[in-house]
Amino acid sequence: MGPTLINGIPAHVLFVHVVVVLVPLTALALLACAVRPQLARRFGLALPVLAAVTLVSVPITTHAGEWLKHHVASDPLVRQHAELGDGLLPWTVGLFALAVALWWMQRRTEAASQADSATVAEEVQPGTRARGALKAAAVVLSLLLGAGAVVQTYRIGDSGARAAWHDNFSTTRTPEAGSR
Image (cartoon, rainbow, N blue to C red):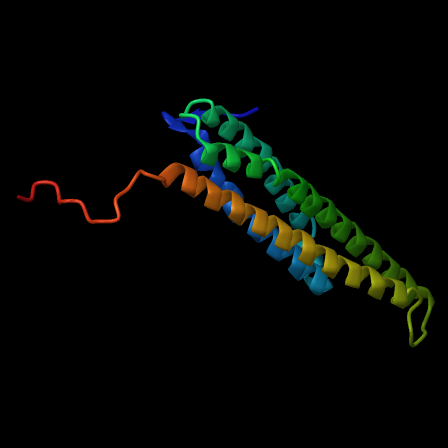
């Protein structure tokens, strides 16, 4: 599915940085576009593309992590980290699906607005209430999905750091190399 080693270093420890950056960035962009439709118009296709890259980065990172899990000593912290890591994919699928829905909704709203303004000169545009409800639903969903994805990313990262660093450092300063 993807490389497991890059320049002799386990690929997981490199790929994880992509996920740690892209998940919160996608969640923030999604929320901003849900709250401000003019931002969704400016983002255009970039929002679903960003969400797609985020989505694809998760299984690649997970695959590299599974490989690494089988190349380190068996440890309950590593197993816990791997279990938590498996829980991120559904959140990123949700982010992607909502990003595509927002993009599609923005395109349809734009087309409907152009058609309405060309044919109807009323004070209240038809479908305004429905659009408001869709916008509110998009904001709530983006908040829930974004928060869930970011919290899950944090939990995974925290467990990974614990697995990597437990018993691998001293709380007291070590003597400097070359000092007496």
